[in-house]
Image (cartoon, rainbow, N blue to C red; front, side, top):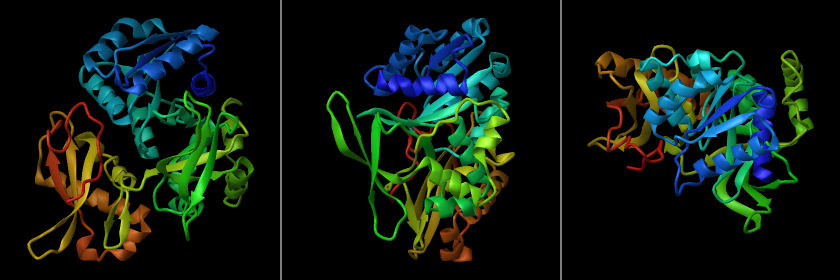
Length: 385
Protein backbone atom coordinates (compact mmCIF):
# COMPACT_ATOMS: atom_id res chain seq x y z
CA UNK A 1 0.00 0.00 0.00
CA UNK A 2 2.89 2.37 0.74
CA UNK A 3 4.36 1.76 -2.69
CA UNK A 4 0.98 2.27 -4.38
CA UNK A 5 1.27 5.86 -3.10
CA UNK A 6 4.30 6.36 -5.34
CA UNK A 7 2.26 5.20 -8.34
CA UNK A 8 -0.58 7.46 -7.26
CA UNK A 9 1.80 10.40 -7.21
CA UNK A 10 2.63 9.74 -10.86
CA UNK A 11 -0.91 8.98 -12.04
CA UNK A 12 -2.35 11.99 -10.19
CA UNK A 13 0.35 14.64 -10.59
CA UNK A 14 1.68 13.76 -14.02
CA UNK A 15 -1.15 11.99 -15.88
CA UNK A 16 -4.25 13.49 -14.18
CA UNK A 17 -5.40 9.91 -13.82
CA UNK A 18 -8.11 10.91 -11.35
CA UNK A 19 -9.93 12.68 -14.20
CA UNK A 20 -9.03 10.63 -17.30
CA UNK A 21 -10.19 7.13 -18.18
CA UNK A 22 -6.86 5.31 -18.34
CA UNK A 23 -5.72 1.99 -19.77
CA UNK A 24 -2.59 0.87 -17.89
CA UNK A 25 -0.66 -1.64 -19.98
CA UNK A 26 1.85 -3.62 -17.91
CA UNK A 27 4.85 -4.31 -20.18
CA UNK A 28 7.19 -5.57 -17.46
CA UNK A 29 7.98 -9.29 -17.49
CA UNK A 30 5.38 -11.27 -15.56
CA UNK A 31 5.86 -14.45 -13.53
CA UNK A 32 8.65 -14.85 -11.00
CA UNK A 33 10.15 -11.40 -11.71
CA UNK A 34 8.91 -8.84 -9.24
CA UNK A 35 8.37 -5.86 -11.55
CA UNK A 36 5.32 -6.98 -13.51
CA UNK A 37 3.17 -8.39 -10.73
CA UNK A 38 4.17 -5.68 -8.24
CA UNK A 39 3.28 -2.93 -10.71
CA UNK A 40 0.00 -4.67 -11.53
CA UNK A 41 -0.92 -4.84 -7.84
CA UNK A 42 -0.14 -1.15 -7.27
CA UNK A 43 -2.21 -0.04 -10.28
CA UNK A 44 -5.11 -2.19 -9.13
CA UNK A 45 -4.94 -0.53 -5.71
CA UNK A 46 -5.44 2.83 -7.45
CA UNK A 47 -8.44 1.44 -9.33
CA UNK A 48 -9.88 0.16 -6.04
CA UNK A 49 -9.43 3.61 -4.55
CA UNK A 50 -11.60 5.06 -7.28
CA UNK A 51 -9.22 6.05 -10.07
CA UNK A 52 -10.82 5.27 -13.47
CA UNK A 53 -7.98 2.91 -14.38
CA UNK A 54 -8.28 -0.40 -16.22
CA UNK A 55 -5.21 -2.62 -15.81
CA UNK A 56 -4.23 -5.15 -18.48
CA UNK A 57 -1.20 -7.43 -18.40
CA UNK A 58 0.30 -8.53 -21.74
CA UNK A 59 3.74 -8.51 -20.11
CA UNK A 60 6.72 -8.32 -22.45
CA UNK A 61 4.93 -9.96 -25.39
CA UNK A 62 4.89 -7.35 -28.15
CA UNK A 63 2.24 -9.10 -30.23
CA UNK A 64 -0.13 -9.05 -27.25
CA UNK A 65 0.71 -5.43 -26.45
CA UNK A 66 -0.18 -4.35 -29.98
CA UNK A 67 -3.41 -6.40 -29.94
CA UNK A 68 -4.43 -4.71 -26.67
CA UNK A 69 -3.65 -1.24 -27.99
CA UNK A 70 -5.54 -1.75 -31.24
CA UNK A 71 -8.62 -3.33 -29.66
CA UNK A 72 -8.95 -1.26 -26.49
CA UNK A 73 -6.84 1.89 -26.78
CA UNK A 74 -9.41 4.18 -28.39
CA UNK A 75 -11.99 3.38 -25.69
CA UNK A 76 -9.86 5.32 -23.18
CA UNK A 77 -8.75 8.92 -22.87
CA UNK A 78 -5.11 7.89 -22.41
CA UNK A 79 -2.93 4.78 -22.53
CA UNK A 80 -0.07 4.32 -20.05
CA UNK A 81 2.75 1.93 -21.00
CA UNK A 82 4.74 0.71 -17.97
CA UNK A 83 8.03 -1.12 -18.54
CA UNK A 84 11.80 -1.34 -18.77
CA UNK A 85 13.11 1.63 -20.85
CA UNK A 86 14.81 -0.24 -23.75
CA UNK A 87 11.80 -2.53 -24.10
CA UNK A 88 9.32 0.36 -24.16
CA UNK A 89 11.39 2.00 -26.91
CA UNK A 90 11.35 -1.28 -28.84
CA UNK A 91 7.55 -1.48 -28.44
CA UNK A 92 7.12 2.07 -29.73
CA UNK A 93 9.51 1.65 -32.68
CA UNK A 94 8.10 -1.73 -33.71
CA UNK A 95 4.58 -0.36 -33.34
CA UNK A 96 5.39 2.49 -35.73
CA UNK A 97 6.79 -0.04 -38.23
CA UNK A 98 3.53 -2.01 -37.93
CA UNK A 99 1.37 1.03 -38.55
CA UNK A 100 0.28 1.93 -35.02
CA UNK A 101 -0.50 5.65 -34.77
CA UNK A 102 0.59 6.25 -31.18
CA UNK A 103 -0.54 9.89 -31.24
CA UNK A 104 -4.24 9.00 -31.22
CA UNK A 105 -3.90 7.03 -27.96
CA UNK A 106 -2.50 9.96 -25.88
CA UNK A 107 0.31 7.74 -24.61
CA UNK A 108 1.99 8.23 -21.22
CA UNK A 109 5.07 6.29 -20.09
CA UNK A 110 6.29 4.85 -16.78
CA UNK A 111 9.83 3.45 -16.58
CA UNK A 112 11.95 1.60 -14.04
CA UNK A 113 15.28 -0.15 -13.84
CA UNK A 114 17.67 2.05 -15.83
CA UNK A 115 19.15 5.53 -16.10
CA UNK A 116 18.33 7.28 -19.39
CA UNK A 117 19.15 10.67 -20.87
CA UNK A 118 16.79 13.58 -21.46
CA UNK A 119 17.54 13.28 -25.19
CA UNK A 120 16.15 9.75 -24.96
CA UNK A 121 13.01 11.02 -23.20
CA UNK A 122 12.55 13.63 -25.91
CA UNK A 123 13.05 11.02 -28.63
CA UNK A 124 10.30 8.76 -27.24
CA UNK A 125 8.05 11.73 -26.63
CA UNK A 126 8.46 12.79 -30.25
CA UNK A 127 7.52 9.30 -31.47
CA UNK A 128 4.34 9.00 -29.40
CA UNK A 129 3.24 12.62 -29.86
CA UNK A 130 4.07 13.90 -26.37
CA UNK A 131 3.74 17.66 -25.96
CA UNK A 132 4.59 18.08 -22.25
CA UNK A 133 7.84 16.31 -21.31
CA UNK A 134 7.46 17.22 -17.62
CA UNK A 135 4.08 15.49 -17.41
CA UNK A 136 3.98 12.72 -20.04
CA UNK A 137 6.46 10.28 -18.49
CA UNK A 138 8.01 9.36 -15.16
CA UNK A 139 10.66 6.96 -13.92
CA UNK A 140 10.59 4.90 -10.73
CA UNK A 141 13.66 4.21 -8.59
CA UNK A 142 13.23 0.93 -6.80
CA UNK A 143 14.50 -2.51 -5.99
CA UNK A 144 12.96 -5.95 -5.68
CA UNK A 145 13.95 -5.91 -1.99
CA UNK A 146 11.88 -2.87 -1.02
CA UNK A 147 9.60 -1.81 -3.84
CA UNK A 148 9.70 1.78 -5.12
CA UNK A 149 12.04 4.03 -3.13
CA UNK A 150 11.38 7.27 -5.00
CA UNK A 151 9.86 8.54 -8.23
CA UNK A 152 10.31 11.25 -10.79
CA UNK A 153 7.93 14.16 -10.43
CA UNK A 154 7.20 16.98 -12.87
CA UNK A 155 9.49 19.11 -10.67
CA UNK A 156 12.41 16.67 -10.74
CA UNK A 157 12.06 16.21 -14.53
CA UNK A 158 12.00 20.00 -15.04
CA UNK A 159 15.21 20.32 -13.02
CA UNK A 160 16.89 17.38 -14.76
CA UNK A 161 16.12 18.75 -18.23
CA UNK A 162 17.70 22.08 -17.25
CA UNK A 163 20.80 20.27 -15.98
CA UNK A 164 20.99 18.16 -19.15
CA UNK A 165 21.36 21.37 -21.13
CA UNK A 166 24.06 22.66 -18.74
CA UNK A 167 26.52 19.80 -18.08
CA UNK A 168 28.95 22.08 -16.23
CA UNK A 169 26.24 23.02 -13.71
CA UNK A 170 25.22 19.37 -13.41
CA UNK A 171 28.79 18.34 -12.65
CA UNK A 172 29.03 21.00 -9.95
CA UNK A 173 25.82 19.69 -8.36
CA UNK A 174 26.39 15.94 -8.69
CA UNK A 175 30.19 15.78 -8.74
CA UNK A 176 30.44 13.59 -11.87
CA UNK A 177 30.37 13.95 -15.65
CA UNK A 178 27.16 12.01 -16.09
CA UNK A 179 23.53 12.76 -15.42
CA UNK A 180 22.01 10.56 -12.72
CA UNK A 181 18.41 9.58 -12.18
CA UNK A 182 16.85 12.36 -10.08
CA UNK A 183 13.75 11.55 -8.03
CA UNK A 184 11.91 12.79 -4.97
CA UNK A 185 11.18 10.54 -2.02
CA UNK A 186 9.09 10.53 1.15
CA UNK A 187 11.42 10.09 4.16
CA UNK A 188 8.45 8.87 6.24
CA UNK A 189 8.13 5.89 3.90
CA UNK A 190 11.72 5.22 2.82
CA UNK A 191 14.48 6.98 4.73
CA UNK A 192 17.77 7.61 2.89
CA UNK A 193 21.27 8.16 4.20
CA UNK A 194 24.59 8.48 2.39
CA UNK A 195 27.73 6.64 3.38
CA UNK A 196 30.23 9.19 2.07
CA UNK A 197 33.33 8.31 0.09
CA UNK A 198 36.57 10.21 0.66
CA UNK A 199 37.06 13.33 -1.51
CA UNK A 200 33.65 12.90 -3.14
CA UNK A 201 30.29 14.65 -3.06
CA UNK A 202 28.60 11.28 -3.54
CA UNK A 203 28.64 8.01 -1.66
CA UNK A 204 26.76 4.76 -1.23
CA UNK A 205 23.04 5.15 -0.65
CA UNK A 206 21.56 3.40 2.39
CA UNK A 207 17.82 3.20 2.97
CA UNK A 208 15.51 2.03 5.74
CA UNK A 209 11.93 0.91 5.31
CA UNK A 210 9.16 -1.14 6.89
CA UNK A 211 8.90 -4.06 4.47
CA UNK A 212 7.93 -7.71 4.86
CA UNK A 213 11.32 -7.96 6.51
CA UNK A 214 12.19 -4.51 7.95
CA UNK A 215 15.27 -3.14 6.19
CA UNK A 216 17.61 -0.97 8.26
CA UNK A 217 20.34 1.07 6.52
CA UNK A 218 20.05 -1.39 3.65
CA UNK A 219 22.92 -1.39 1.15
CA UNK A 220 22.37 -2.34 -2.51
CA UNK A 221 25.61 -0.71 -3.78
CA UNK A 222 23.88 2.21 -5.53
CA UNK A 223 26.04 5.32 -5.84
CA UNK A 224 24.43 8.72 -5.34
CA UNK A 225 23.47 11.40 -2.86
CA UNK A 226 20.70 13.41 -1.20
CA UNK A 227 19.73 17.05 -1.83
CA UNK A 228 17.17 18.76 0.40
CA UNK A 229 14.27 20.56 -1.28
CA UNK A 230 15.30 24.12 -0.39
CA UNK A 231 18.96 23.32 -0.99
CA UNK A 232 18.10 22.35 -4.58
CA UNK A 233 16.12 25.53 -5.21
CA UNK A 234 18.87 27.71 -3.72
CA UNK A 235 21.50 26.02 -5.91
CA UNK A 236 19.47 26.56 -9.09
CA UNK A 237 18.73 30.16 -8.14
CA UNK A 238 22.45 30.91 -8.51
CA UNK A 239 21.98 30.16 -12.21
CA UNK A 240 18.75 32.16 -12.57
CA UNK A 241 16.58 29.06 -12.92
CA UNK A 242 13.34 28.71 -10.98
CA UNK A 243 11.76 25.31 -11.75
CA UNK A 244 8.62 26.06 -9.71
CA UNK A 245 7.83 29.14 -11.81
CA UNK A 246 8.51 27.08 -14.92
CA UNK A 247 6.01 24.40 -13.83
CA UNK A 248 3.37 26.86 -12.71
CA UNK A 249 3.04 27.98 -16.32
CA UNK A 250 1.48 24.56 -16.94
CA UNK A 251 -0.43 24.05 -13.67
CA UNK A 252 0.16 23.41 -9.99
CA UNK A 253 0.34 19.63 -9.90
CA UNK A 254 3.64 17.92 -9.24
CA UNK A 255 5.19 20.43 -6.81
CA UNK A 256 5.97 18.73 -3.49
CA UNK A 257 8.38 19.89 -0.80
CA UNK A 258 10.07 16.51 -0.66
CA UNK A 259 13.84 15.86 -0.66
CA UNK A 260 15.67 14.66 -3.76
CA UNK A 261 17.84 11.59 -4.14
CA UNK A 262 20.10 11.16 -7.17
CA UNK A 263 21.27 7.75 -8.29
CA UNK A 264 24.14 6.87 -10.59
CA UNK A 265 23.67 3.15 -10.18
CA UNK A 266 26.33 0.65 -9.31
CA UNK A 267 30.01 1.34 -9.79
CA UNK A 268 30.63 -1.79 -11.88
CA UNK A 269 28.70 -0.21 -14.77
CA UNK A 270 31.64 2.01 -15.69
CA UNK A 271 34.89 1.44 -17.55
CA UNK A 272 38.24 3.11 -16.99
CA UNK A 273 40.11 4.31 -20.09
CA UNK A 274 43.40 6.19 -19.72
CA UNK A 275 42.30 6.93 -16.16
CA UNK A 276 39.01 8.49 -17.31
CA UNK A 277 35.76 7.00 -16.04
CA UNK A 278 33.42 6.44 -18.99
CA UNK A 279 29.75 5.89 -18.24
CA UNK A 280 27.07 4.34 -20.45
CA UNK A 281 25.06 7.56 -20.06
CA UNK A 282 27.77 9.45 -21.98
CA UNK A 283 27.67 7.06 -24.93
CA UNK A 284 23.88 6.88 -24.98
CA UNK A 285 23.55 10.55 -25.89
CA UNK A 286 25.74 9.99 -28.96
CA UNK A 287 23.28 7.38 -30.24
CA UNK A 288 20.30 9.69 -29.74
CA UNK A 289 21.37 12.39 -32.16
CA UNK A 290 19.43 13.16 -35.38
CA UNK A 291 19.81 10.51 -38.11
CA UNK A 292 21.86 8.20 -35.84
CA UNK A 293 18.76 7.44 -33.74
CA UNK A 294 16.97 6.10 -36.83
CA UNK A 295 19.63 3.43 -37.37
CA UNK A 296 20.01 1.96 -33.89
CA UNK A 297 17.91 0.51 -31.06
CA UNK A 298 19.86 2.39 -28.38
CA UNK A 299 21.51 -0.74 -26.95
CA UNK A 300 25.29 -1.03 -26.97
CA UNK A 301 28.15 -2.74 -25.16
CA UNK A 302 31.31 -0.78 -24.38
CA UNK A 303 34.66 -2.18 -23.32
CA UNK A 304 38.38 -1.48 -23.52
CA UNK A 305 40.25 -3.76 -25.95
CA UNK A 306 43.94 -4.20 -26.75
CA UNK A 307 45.67 -4.76 -30.08
CA UNK A 308 48.65 -7.04 -30.67
CA UNK A 309 51.00 -4.32 -29.36
CA UNK A 310 48.83 -3.97 -26.25
CA UNK A 311 47.65 -0.50 -27.23
CA UNK A 312 44.25 0.13 -25.69
CA UNK A 313 41.16 1.28 -27.57
CA UNK A 314 37.58 2.09 -26.67
CA UNK A 315 35.23 -0.44 -28.28
CA UNK A 316 31.50 0.18 -28.67
CA UNK A 317 29.35 -2.61 -30.11
CA UNK A 318 26.03 -1.13 -31.28
CA UNK A 319 22.74 -2.90 -32.04
CA UNK A 320 21.20 -1.89 -35.36
CA UNK A 321 17.48 -1.25 -35.59
CA UNK A 322 15.38 -3.94 -37.33
CA UNK A 323 15.84 -3.84 -41.09
CA UNK A 324 18.90 -1.55 -40.99
CA UNK A 325 22.05 -2.78 -42.74
CA UNK A 326 25.65 -2.10 -41.76
CA UNK A 327 27.71 0.35 -43.85
CA UNK A 328 31.06 2.04 -43.32
CA UNK A 329 29.37 5.44 -43.52
CA UNK A 330 27.09 4.49 -40.61
CA UNK A 331 30.04 3.27 -38.53
CA UNK A 332 31.93 6.52 -39.12
CA UNK A 333 28.90 8.68 -38.36
CA UNK A 334 28.18 6.78 -35.13
CA UNK A 335 31.83 7.00 -34.04
CA UNK A 336 31.87 10.76 -34.69
CA UNK A 337 28.60 11.30 -32.82
CA UNK A 338 29.73 9.30 -29.76
CA UNK A 339 33.10 11.09 -29.75
CA UNK A 340 31.44 14.52 -29.91
CA UNK A 341 29.18 13.77 -26.95
CA UNK A 342 31.93 12.14 -24.89
CA UNK A 343 34.08 15.25 -25.25
CA UNK A 344 31.12 17.52 -24.45
CA UNK A 345 29.85 15.63 -21.42
CA UNK A 346 32.94 14.02 -19.91
CA UNK A 347 35.80 16.38 -19.08
CA UNK A 348 37.96 13.47 -17.87
CA UNK A 349 37.72 11.82 -21.27
CA UNK A 350 38.44 15.09 -23.09
CA UNK A 351 41.53 15.80 -21.00
CA UNK A 352 42.93 12.39 -20.03
CA UNK A 353 42.66 10.45 -23.29
CA UNK A 354 45.22 11.30 -26.01
CA UNK A 355 43.48 12.57 -29.17
CA UNK A 356 44.72 9.63 -31.26
CA UNK A 357 42.91 7.22 -28.89
CA UNK A 358 39.68 9.15 -28.46
CA UNK A 359 37.68 7.93 -31.47
CA UNK A 360 35.81 4.77 -30.48
CA UNK A 361 36.03 1.61 -32.56
CA UNK A 362 32.48 0.81 -33.66
CA UNK A 363 31.13 -2.66 -34.35
CA UNK A 364 27.57 -2.98 -35.67
CA UNK A 365 25.44 -6.03 -34.88
CA UNK A 366 22.00 -7.07 -36.09
CA UNK A 367 18.98 -6.83 -33.76
CA UNK A 368 18.99 -9.57 -31.14
CA UNK A 369 22.58 -10.69 -31.76
CA UNK A 370 22.93 -13.68 -29.39
CA UNK A 371 26.43 -12.76 -28.17
CA UNK A 372 25.86 -9.08 -27.38
CA UNK A 373 22.10 -8.47 -27.41
CA UNK A 374 20.30 -11.70 -26.47
CA UNK A 375 16.53 -11.45 -26.27
CA UNK A 376 14.64 -11.85 -23.01
CA UNK A 377 17.40 -10.91 -20.56
CA UNK A 378 18.34 -7.64 -18.87
CA UNK A 379 20.93 -5.84 -20.97
CA UNK A 380 24.42 -5.00 -19.69
CA UNK A 381 26.10 -1.94 -21.20
CA UNK A 382 29.68 -2.76 -20.16
CA UNK A 383 31.85 -5.80 -20.62
CA UNK A 384 35.18 -6.72 -19.08
CA UNK A 385 37.68 -8.08 -21.61
